[in-house]
Image (cartoon, rainbow, N blue to C red; front, side):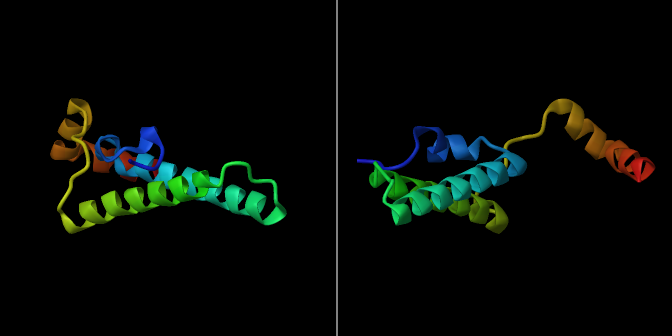
Length: 98
């Protein structure tokens, strides 16, 4: 029996880019904070949700670490972005913005 959010299944986490993964981590940590606060004040109805959110956070950290070690990889860039990065146009555009 799997515990956690169905939206954050490992297969779906692998499909997210690094920025989206960081956003999901931030949202999960905020939810955990709110759940802990509710628990401390006696307002928490579903205590199982605490465990589920903790496991979601662990899944996100695992995916981030796998990418850092080169075990997993971020999804491929769209063709337009990959071509711009390969030709160096992306770097030139960033220099002009600064």
